[in-house]
Image (cartoon, rainbow, N blue to C red; front, side):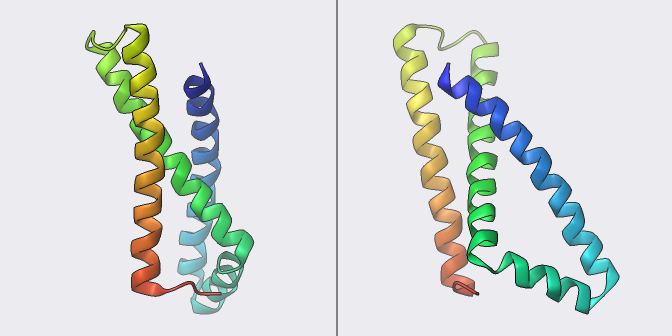
Amino acid sequence: MVISILHRITGAVLGVGALLLVGVLLSIAAGPGTYEVLRAYISTGLGQLFLILWTLALFLHLFNGVRHLVFDAGFGFGIEATRISGIVVLLATVVFTAAVWFIAWLNYGMQA
């Protein structure tokens, strides 16, 4: 039940993130000065936190969607299988989010 609620919440978060992505693309199209203003906001601690949470939402929604594809194929309906697959979704979400941000940090450092 908790994963189902989180799936819906992450869907909404991804929608907001998609709108912000459009904003980033528009700022790039508007020119370097406009993009640098947006980049300054994104580089703050709050901006970085939002990006990390958005990445977390992306992976949770992705992995839970794959889980539901497995359900649609007729597998994993038992109580124990459902519990285990929920734990796998949560662990994969944390691991992949951490990996993305660790790789970003290694390549670009924490830019503030």
